[in-house]
Amino acid sequence: MQEPQAIVLYDGDCNLCAAVVRFAIVRNRSGTLHYAAMQSKTGERLLQEHGLAESAADTFVFVERGRAFTRSTAALRLLRRLDGGWPMLAALLAIPRFVRDPIYSFVARNRYRWFGKREQCMLMRPEFRERFYD
Image 1 (tube, rainbow, N blue to C red):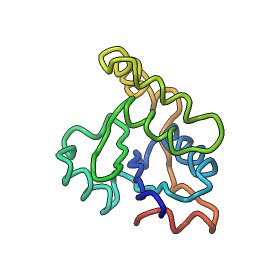
Image 2: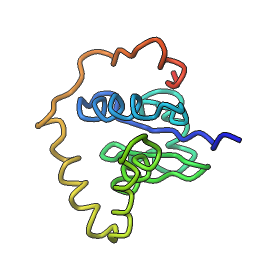
Image 3: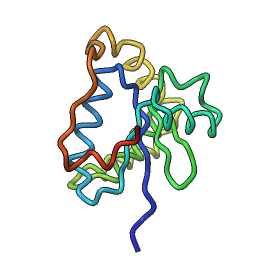
Image 4: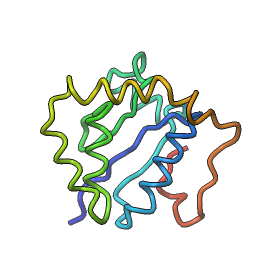
């Protein structure tokens, strides 16, 4: 039986976020990860359902088995779903959030300055389209 899917909610305007999605999609050959921009209908609905609509602009959200995870916890839980050695980095979940999240927040605050904003939709290969929601 296949594990329930997980959904990555990403900032559709952020170049860093788009790079993370491209990185993850090719390293999740099983196809258990799905993706939705926070600005999409699906993204907005999921943020609302998990009480994150007001605070999601500066975070990464990973919805897995009906629970939403944010910031560094979301990123590390995503790594558990990737092929290769990436799941080993999920061991960093043992580090308390109050240590991990300030590092995450520093990058999140500066992501537009460092990586820029997208001016067009992310193009994906046809074989990956079914993994994206609206």
